[in-house]
Amino acid sequence: MRGIYYNGKDAVYREDLPMPVRTEKESLIKIHVCAVCNTDKEVRKGYRPDFRGVMGHEFVGEVVESSDPSLIGKRVVGELNASCGKCIYCQTGRPTHCVSRRVLGMANKDGAFAEYMTIDTNLLHLVPDNLPDEIAVFTEPLAAAMEILTQIKISPDKNAAVLGDGRLALLVAQVLSLTGIDLTVIGKHEDKLKLFESFAKVTTCGEKEGYEYVAECTGSETGLPEAFELVRKKGTVILKSTYAGNISLNMSMIAVNEITIVGSRCGPFEPALKLLSEGKIKLPPIELYDLKDFEKAFASRAFKAGFSFT
Image (tube, rainbow, N blue to C red):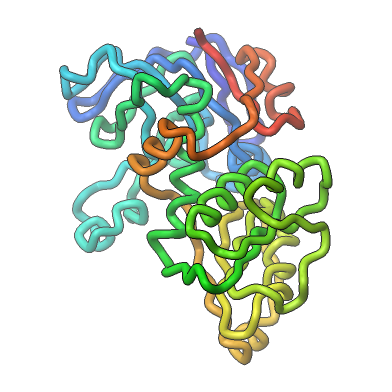
């Protein structure tokens, strides 16, 4: 089987990977389309130093075998985190924080950058018939953007800023714009910022202490310190970026200014699929490559790049 394998040092293209074999609670998926996430790029930089296996977690595929026979032949997307169901986090309604969770393409579980993969059946979601693979593949990152709305109460009479002008920022900004809030997107690239102009104000220089909510979506270690400069006292910073490495912060300033920090990652799939199928989220097309050209996909400057198997 062909796939992109992380060997502990870097990603390599292989054609000798064994065909995955599902357990009794899993499904076998034939991958149609999968997408490169910034987190995949960070894995190559050491974000998950203990991981060895097939990379990737954003996918659309067809169920070939399943613990639920009614799913066979159906198109699906799937969540990242397989939980144990027994630990304190699983027992208290926080399965994505399971102490022994397996994470697609990142922790103790082969991911989607291959012709086939296995996944816990209860993590699968059916793709609506009207939703093409090339759009459905955005379900996971859109769900992550929607997680913000499950974590904090956004007051639409206040204002918000999204820091960043890339893929994650575009998804987060569109989700926040649906609340009707006064929204500003702060980026570095005027050509990218044009994608935001239909639903938000755009700028390359944000207002210091100008925003009640700041969503940090840069994917860079420089983003969080900048977010703290932009947020108002008693405001909220929403951290969406994940990256390898550590940063230094003035924690006294955070305490004195009573700033709330909310870490945010995985989110609800069904609402994301609904927004995509109703056309309420607008996205540039994904740029698709063959697996053997994975370096081009990882280096692509397109809005989104990935792999097609169809």
